[in-house]
Length: 493
Image (cartoon, rainbow, N blue to C red; front, top):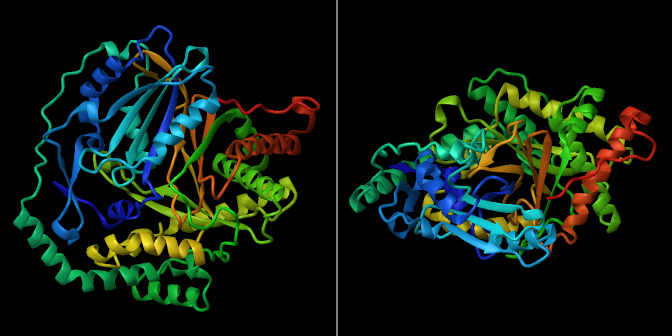
């Protein structure tokens, strides 16, 4: 039995008629020589579901929402409630796959069961199949999501033929009614003290919190709060974090559209090496260029840089079996206002280097601390309205961009080779109507873009601008090494 943290619970509370708070991945497989069908997937899940707590636990709500829910074992677990199959109509191209997955991605998960689903999608062109899996963000973050995926994959096509005995799972019984109410009463009485402590800790990061950090006196208050807390570390000063108005920001609808594609990781590494920056910085520069081009096409490019949030895992080695989130966020300006590609790349490198140096000195705790300020009953009722109001009036960021590292060798599921794995994430009123996530796998960077069509049309066009951005940076860095007029194709499917 484990109670959700305030941050985990926030991902539950943010859900509304227009927001589904799960993270997902779309794996495209070549089943040649394997048996990637529903029966094989079912057997795989039954053999390995115990390896990932996120797949075997369900929520137990506290009566009247008086406290945060608990995780416990599901005594009525039925795989039929989690594993589904569908077939695309001919010709089964990437557009049809994206449309089918978007329809699934829109739907919220059933909270009466463990919070995940897996969908086998057949009928893809070239004899391929796809497996789309979504898990609620209350249960996993980016790193634990990758770990959950790893439990279902093998290093060789023959891996699934090796049967693994399923050990007896430790009991995770639901707390009794009186136990939950007693815990709620204690936490209600002690909440003012805990909220005060959270407020002090959050104040130390006041200059790193978007929107708030730009207010007069925010930096002085942050320094004073750190001094009171005994934190003597001198942290790099952050630039202003005021998000400009873009079409991405404002109330979102329940509809989703998505696109996916891949770029060669070796080409991204060449750009990184030529400029003395990290691969992650190049990813951010690609996104900055793509967003700049997309907004410029619509006469909606602001004069100020966009402000992006980059989730960062703070999970320790001993926390692999813990359900929930252990993440912080780096918030930084993205130089979409810089016209030259080379200068824009260098600006990204400088900005991200400053943010990373500050993060290395003291990972910001404000994300979790802010979630702890209000008592659980108030948070559960107020969060959707707060997100919608703030996203409409004062959006703190323009969008979220994530980069999750993955293995650089082929993996297999039910004997079929995983050709690509496209991550797909969450949209909220507060974080904007576009989310870009990428996953490095087997020599490629696999991008998944999720958008609300009311906030961003032509999500495939945005993906195309990523390809153009890499072509531009390669030309900027290595001149004619790749041949005149020869670009790097963004591989889809």
